[in-house]
Image 1 (cartoon, each protein chain N blue to C red):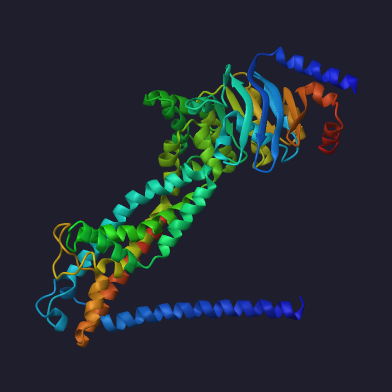
Image 2 (cartoon, rainbow over the protein chains, first blue to last red):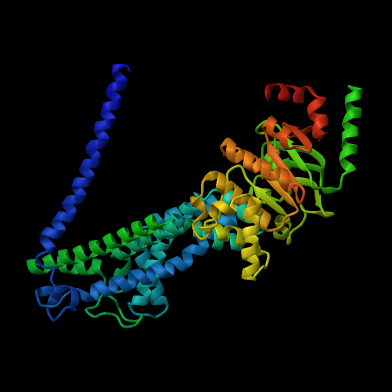
Length: 278
Length: 267
């Protein structure tokens, strides 16, 4: 090798190593600061109680309302988004495969939707809410977050379906399957591990988003009991507590961040385990 | 040159004395930029092995895919002409295409087992045909796994995933799966190209046995394989049929320079 090629080789080797280490350090730092500040505030009381009077000024109670609200909202939105996304993803990969231009158009449209800031979805949800004469509610939050995460779920499922070899499709057809049978009996099963990842990816995005629920789900100190009740969420709980001038309340915000991170972590690990089991 | 034409006609006559199962006439296939199949006219005889022979890219696979309309999956292909099976032009058929496909079992270059158990891979096609009786299904699963000499290897793990089998076993499973829907015709697209020599031989042996009950149409570019298996040979080159006829005739007495060259290099 010439000297130049050797230099090039080692330059990129060290560059990629350094950047990788940097990224990991940043991640570790984030997790460390959350834990450092939040761990002291984390207690059984914080996890299991609703906020009491003067909570945001240092009063007692916990973030139970936000934990349950976030889980309700993210699970509801993920289920709703799945109901929408599965047929769409299968449809574009089974029926639209003969129309490549339409397919490119749809994928582009979904990619744009993926990139739309969540506050825009929040504003859209808010307008819808006003139009239907509803108040801030869990139901409105679920619909808005579902709209936010559907493009993500559809595209993630779409990517999984695109990796299915054409030969499998041909095999299914040659045995006499209809398109619907091919979609639900063959493609769905083949893509299932990938779908699990798509669903959890969307769930992770949904549970962590603050802007889309700000105007739609609202905020409350109570656990919602029906779809028409407003619902608190962890990201907004973090936001409101961090806005407080009192350090104790701020630390509780970090405790909420730990809970949120932990939920996402559990979801990711479950996804991996599911994937490996296959 | 004149003698060549006469011989070619004689060969055609020889084929038509057999019982025909499929009649292809004036078949043309176009993509956006190319004329892939040019004026194909052949008759496929029943209960024989017809081999589509030719170099890669000559349109053999496309011709095979026309026969069960898998060409529907490719938006860029345009077909005209007729392919008649039992007197019915399958190219104009709109609603019964799934039934037509069930008349044909497909074995591909690489096996694609369905994402389910070994048992269900075979049961799948049966269920699509409306077979509900579990005992009948179990019987047929065993019968067809025996037919491809796979039963003894998998009988203790019928419920495990078909995708864990070795590639040779998978290819035999795919053959069994195709046989289970009781087709009249087996379409095979270079069925041994991904297999080791031993698995290839097993598949070839099964084909020779299967021709008593089925019509086999096999694509290959391997001359030796064609010689071992073929009753009839269709030699293709750049989308055209150059020569076709009785295998012994074709191999002993090739008429065109292209086939002579192919046979010389193929050895």
